Length: 315
Ligand SMILES: *[C@@H]1O[C@H](CO)[C@@H](O)[C@H](O)[C@H]1NC(C)=O
Ligand SMILES: *[C@@H]1O[C@H](CO)[C@@H](O)[C@H](O)[C@H]1NC(C)=O
Figure 1 (cartoon, helix red, strand yellow):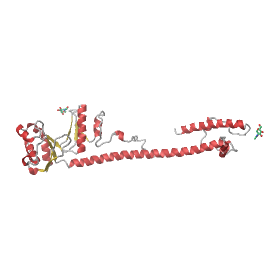
Figure 2 (cartoon, rainbow, N blue to C red):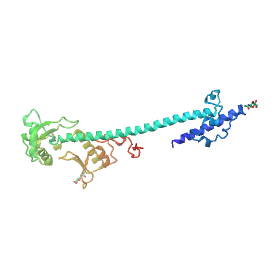
Figure 3 (cartoon, rainbow, N blue to C red):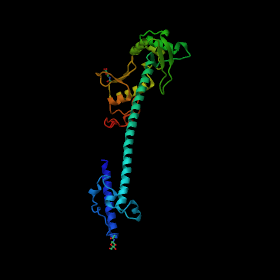
């Protein structure tokens, strides 16, 4: 396929030569040119090296062309020069193409490595949060000892049937409020099993006595929230999963209390799948178009070098 431009080029050369030769004949009708009678395309296809200027015109040299006439020798010289620079360029191009593919493959591999490291780092951060439980819609006042976050959390736990004392808690403090949301409280338990017990008992918040709820809730009209403490990136991924559930009418998505993993159920009877990345959500539903990727790369951002035959540099 790389020969075809050469063939076209040779054809043009042959045509040029025929025209130049005709012009030459009218001014020098009796000049002897023994081997130049056939200048058709077939002859122009003779491979490089098979012809030399001597075979055509022993009297003319490349410098003859300064006289304004295109002699066969000059053309051949030009042709050989062009051909060798074409070959050099072609070799360089082939080499660069290989280098480019290698660079693209390296970029993709590094993308994957970065994602893997990002996931491992997030797992590590999540691991450190296993003892934590987040509470929302809890009324508290840090200046009032009876309404301290610690006291309010202990009272709420008591309200859902889990006995917690101050010595069970490492620390209880308010979390910085997120945009447009009420302040939450984070509690760190000494024993993560006790924290998990609080999480598994969270359904009981519905049965808290209204009089007690009035003292406990920031907004008594709303329910309490008791959630595992997940990393910010995981939290962003969870809200994408929730969007997908709402958009496409899938069954549910939630955070596993013990592992902090995001679980996703398409239909009521399905086994929940672990969601590790935005890519996992796109794999569940190709119609889902995220505006950001967490723990994965948008396919469009990867170089298209996955053809195994393309990646073979051994040959
Ligand atoms: C070419 O022909 C002309 C006359 O037509 C003649 O005078 C001249 O000597 C010839 N040249 C050669 C190289 O034969
Ligand atoms: C999800 O499935 C559960 C059963 O596993 C069912 O009780 C619940 O209503 C379903 N929710 C939705 C929104 O489909």
